[in-house]
Amino acid sequence: MGKIVIIKTGSTLPGLKTRRGDFEDWIRGGMRLSPRDTTVVDVAAGEDLPPARGCRGIAITGSHDMVSERLDWSERTAEWLRDAVRQGVPTLGICYGHQLLAHALGGMVDYNPRGPERGTTEIDLRDAARTDTLLGGLPRTLKVHASHSQSVLTLPPGAVLLASNPWDENQAFRINECAWGVQFHPEFDSEIMRAYCDHDGSGACSDIGETPQAAEVLRRFTAIVNAGTGTAGRTPS
Image (tube, rainbow, N blue to C red; front, side, top):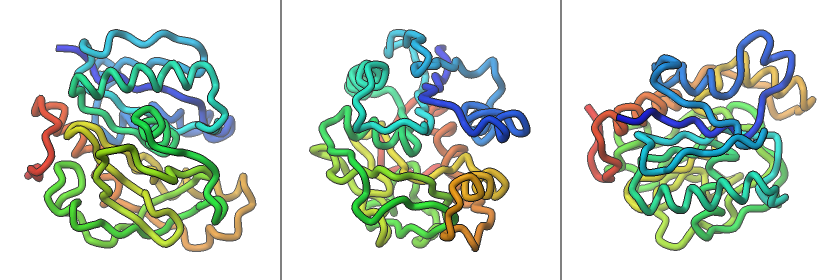
């Protein structure tokens, strides 16, 4: 079988990277995978993606770039993602990855008119999330870590809205029964979130805490990949 491909769309803060590793390390750890289970492709550095049909699953990291910049590597990755979703490869986009997936499939991404969302916040799962493979069974109100300036302003055609909050209507979605986007960061812990808040000097980060139920999303995605299906409507035990 193929490996889970982690599409690296950027790197974290230099000091944090030295202490804690990078985006792909946090995602791999959250998925409880070893390096031999994954292939990391640094698309932001110009690395080529493998054929989508050979991937067992796909996870797309966050980035400090903006989807609306339409950078060459980002647009090439969006085209590749369209093909991967058409082929039914289980796919999870996180923050920038969430936005890039939405953009690839026909949604609109731009700066959130309410401004950046940073810190530990809450999102509300929608009715459709109750039977969703990835989010079903989680608390209706979920504590999450957020750090983003852009948002999915319009979902792609056919997308199912799974989570919202007053700051960002489109916090999570599913499309084509195999692909999910989450605006929040299930790979962040409180130390990582605090480092971003300190870096940004944001006053919205006074109540940082752990988000273990949001972190469960990564383990659930691993279960979906291991089951060999992205079909929605079944909640993993």
